[in-house]
Length: 118
Length: 107
Image (cartoon, rainbow over all chains, first blue to last red; front, side, top):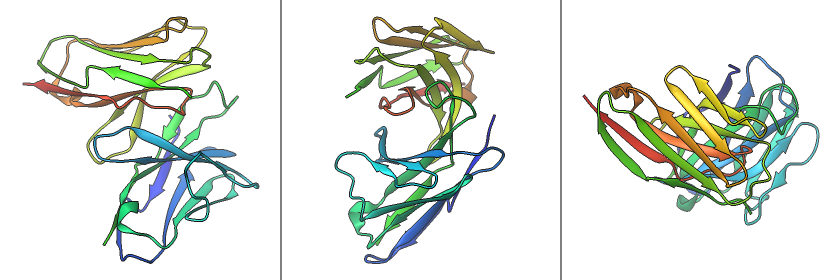
């Protein structure tokens, strides 16, 4: 299947700093990517839909100024957690749908990024 | 808003036993449903994708059924192995996820 690479796999940062997480589709183009957040022992929560060449669509309750998403190319989307605080510590995962109609295709996930804010 | 429930939350079985994992969802107007496996601290690995027009999908020891009208899907894992130990998640249309069923297969 298609490969989605997410980097870094883990990061520790100081409170108040910003952290950038990259999500790349390695062998296919992704005009859309999804960003999720997962708390311990809970399921994934969709944060936003990243669209190549246009603004991201954020889910209700997700601060767009805090979680900046940039989808500058067909193979790269980035999530920047700005002015991070300890409550932002979580597991962040991206995904990209495979080729074909968005509704019917399989989703491929990155390896996830464990963010710890101290 | 789509709500997804997975039962049971956890399951522990001896090696060789068959596993039955249940997923229910509230909005039956879906395009597809996907089952994933997640190992601790890792991302998700896609297992099976069932389109809304299909009733089941098979891959090796895995079989997933879909009853769209009643909002249910079931993942069957035959002849379980210790390597099957993981959390299994279902996701209608990739956007909503259940909390998962954590499976432990004892050698």
